[in-house]
Image (cartoon, rainbow, N blue to C red; front, side, top):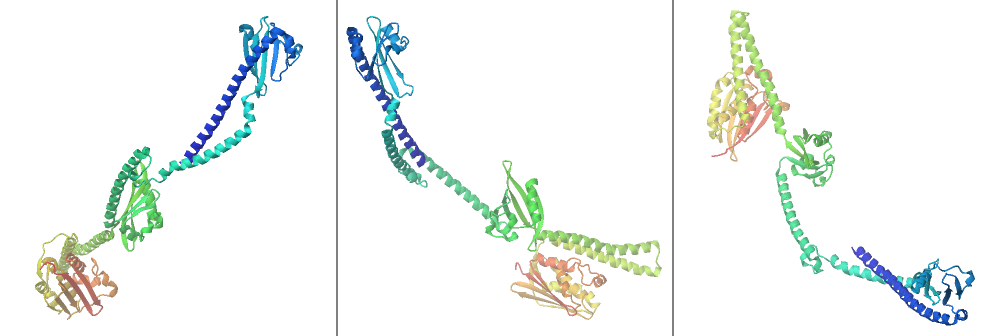
Length: 552
């Protein structure tokens, strides 16, 4: 702005100087022409009067370095000229001033030299005899005058230009200074030109509007951050170049990154080619989904394209932890396969025995044995179906009415039911202690039954099963010990899986379904408890169940 003001002032000053010099020169030249024209007319009157009286003799005796007199006959022939021999001069009948004098009595004209540096003025008067007397004088033109004054003009111009330069610089600084000192943060507190008042008032209103918009934007940004911070799902916002605009803590934990990843390409955070390909596909298709594994967890990644005014401005990536869901899907598939297998086995045995009896392909004495096999396999099938139904009910996590349960009484009932099974192998069962919990009586009975039933089934003949109840830190602790075959250490982590049996041949002989301990695990989980297994092969197994007492 300062340079523009400076140039404007400087150019205006120089222009005024040049125009002034031109006007002065032109005015002086015009003034001198007028004065000289008047003087020329006076001289012509004197010469005409003398020529009329004395004739050519007057002109011959006249000596002048400034004026030139020419006497022209009515037909344009030169009678006499004070500077040139008349016989050598051409006819002047066509000259402007001569023509005018012949018509009106007086005439005047002016003509420039070839170089335009000299101008000749002519004045003519008609004599009584019809001839014309002309007087002329030459003088320098304005151009020659300017050229003659060129040196002082240059000096004046340079001096004026320097003075204009200094004054223009100072004026420009003085004009701009109030602008440079404006406090735009507080526009209404400035003391400056009155003409700036409307502008400052407008800036003040814009400040208020911007402050309001910034507060709204900050509030929305804080709200967005609060929401994303609390999200369990990972959220990543990418621009159209694939660079990270925002990432919440959950996503940072998934992709193992920090705050310094903002504005970086997402490929620098996760170099998975599968994820990179999905991001590029989402830009074209609008949506893409895939599953990835990170730090032992499985995540569902949904990538969606963001479009504004028909232009792609970025993508949003949501990461859901589906580890439990994926495990549940795998368990469900495995469960379905196992159920199919476990149901087919007794059914095939029943169908085979029934076909033999139906077709009369067996001896009469063998029929009772096959009938017992049908009953045994049918019983096993019913038990399997009952266990599957119980397990499905537990997995559905439906709400079941709860009550105060005395575990001492419940344990006595369970061991009473299992008394015949234990007596067949001469296994001693004992229980001691007191404990109460707030839970589902039926489910707790199933849990104790399966624990004690397994302790009896997988025990040795003449073995021992002991159930100990206790209260520790407002929790009920149930300990079931046996002196059985024990569980190999490499298989202990799997005994609570559905249909998993350490000794499949023994399980089939004892009629086990492979779902007992799985039911136990789900009952414990339903009551928000914990289960612990301790076992040594050939020595025995101890299972410790800890349940919160809940409501009293």
